[in-house]
Amino acid sequence: MEDLVHHADDREVWLNLRDRFPHPYTDADARDWIRAAAGQRPVQSFAIEVEGRAGGGIGVHPMVDVHRRTAEIGYWLGKEFWNRGIATEAVRATAEYAFPAFDLARLEALVYEWNPASARVLEKAGFQLEARLRRAITKDGRTIDALLYSMVR
Figure 1 (cartoon, helix red, strand yellow):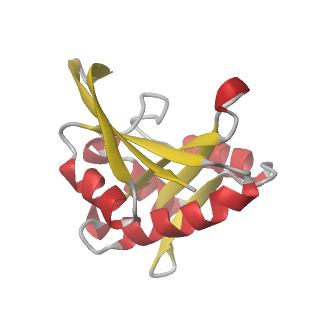
Figure 2 (figure 1 turned 120 degrees about the vertical axis):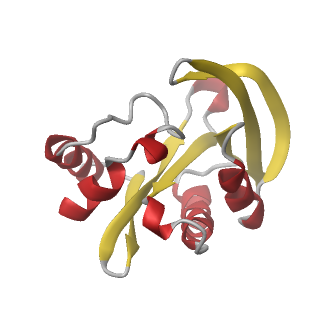
Figure 3 (figure 1 turned 180 degrees about the vertical axis):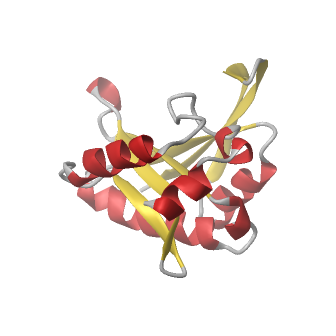
């Protein structure tokens, strides 16, 4: 848990995530996330293990109603592990798991315009850019564009 908190409690990581991801990130936040993940069936949230340590997280969030065969994938990785292909590998593995586990036709991800590294992760994992959603995200006091990526089966 200490590794999880260490990597998650980073403003540069938080800047690329939804506001529901806490900052600062505390031991209590890590315990809550682990407890919630442990109760999921099928599992939706995973730690990204790097060198035997929790270095990040990845999750699949199924949609409902007419979007029931679509899920959003989201991920984060501690800064010391950036630019090593780890996130790409985690996205590929999670996509392979998610399509049959949730009977999906589509996985999608939103990338904030200021995060081209995340766009590269998705592209290398086989996702395609579908759209630029203009002024769709407000984060840290700024309203910016989001890039919508998808993978279909």
